Structures are given as structure tokens and as C-alpha cells.
Amino acid sequence: MATGVSAIAAPASAASAPLLPPTPVGAPQDFEFEHGNWDTSLRRRLRPLSGSDVWAEYVGTTLVHPLLSGRANLVELDVSGPEGRIQGLSLRLFEVQQQRWTLNFSNAASGTLAAPMVGGFGGSPRGLFYSAEGFNGRPILVRFIIESLSVDRCRFEQAFSADGGVTWEINWIAVDTRRSY
Image (cartoon, rainbow, N blue to C red):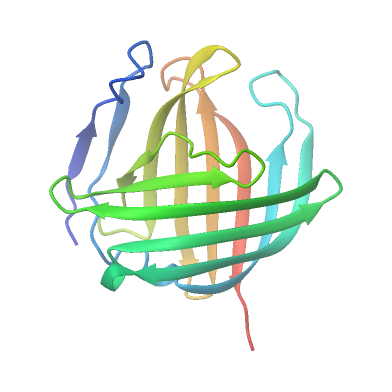
């Protein structure tokens, strides 16, 4: 795997959005650890960037299907809790020329794709991804960390920054445990 750092420009449509921080480069095999079926435990901050520390808990499953000989994968998330059900789909694509991954997420409730996150693992078990988005009428940075903790366990963390990456507020934590049959 490559171990360099890739600088990433913000999408052209996000002219007022902050520039994305650099990330490790990616490699086609970065997500091999995650292929398969998982039990998911998820915590979601209900009102991000509001000063609230109220979280909702969800449990369910995640299925990760490899595609294109590992250069892509499709993630199906289905979790439920007292705050309802979250069904999501993520198409992850490896950009060979840029040596990075794009993470393209859609929540079934909206039926639209969020701004793609970009980044990679740089040869480590920890992937780092960013996007520039709008939230409640203001530009923010979004950071997503994917970490392989062991062969049978991985962790996901999403955070928002409203100050260009100086401070981050975590709003999504998921832990997946490989399903045994």
C-alpha cells in the first residue's frame, strides 16, 4: 500500500466551503477487511452543532459486498432504535489516478446522495475521509474515520467542524462485529 498523503480540493460547487485537509492515499485493497456481514451498534447525536449532547442508540446489521475485484464495494446499513430506523447505502469507489476512495452515502429517508467523502488508509488500519458540506445553512467540514480494530471488529466515527477543522464534534459512532454463522 502507498503511504503518502493526498491533498484534496473542495468540490467546485462548494465555493464557500473550507478546503479539505490532506488524507492518506488509498489502495484498492483498503476495504478487504470489511467484506462480509456484520452486527452493528450505532450512536447518533440528535442535534449536531447545537450544543446538545443527546444521543440515540440503534442496533442492526451492515452488509459489505465487494465489487470490481475490490476496487469498489457496496455497504447496506439497516439499524433501528427508539428514534426510528436508519437504512443507508454507501457506494465506495477507488479512483486509480487520484489514489483515493470516494464514499458516496445515501439515506433511504432522503433517497439522495450526500456529498462524496474522499480519502484513504495510507497502509494503516485507519482510514481518514473528508467532505465539505452545508449544514443548517452554513458550510462545514465532515470527517469520517474507519478503523479496523481486529479481523472481526471495526469502528466508524463521523464528526462535524464549523470552524474549518480547528475543532470537531463527533456525531456518529458505529461499531461492527462480524456475524458468526
